Length: 160
Image (cartoon, rainbow, N blue to C red; front, side, top):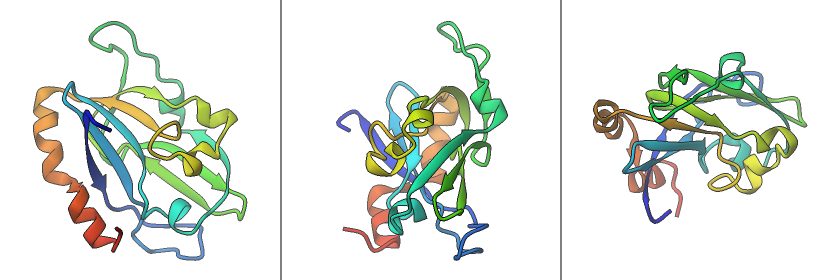
């Protein structure tokens, strides 16, 4: 946490849940000075807010088959904020799409979530992250314009 600035992507419309149509599919983006962005679910997301139990995390075909190599991370999936990364299936049959949240190249999906999907809710800011995206200098400058800073997010969602 010491080397990351945390921002929040607020959005997404719930579908196939009791609260269909609500816009609270919040995600965090931890920005590192080297251009890496760790993406995961934020406290206002229904998985955490409503205490849902995760049954399975299924990667989007493009994200799950993503292969990167070399220093320049060639072959990484080019992501936009609304690029689907995964779908989370819960024990109550609700499901949620997890989006990239930022522009950049997908360099890693968290393979631990396939075997231990509960990490998504038990350790969302650490071992339960969703993916890592790398941004170029131009993208790094623009990302802060489109995301909420931690204080703004906490105020919006009435969190401490």
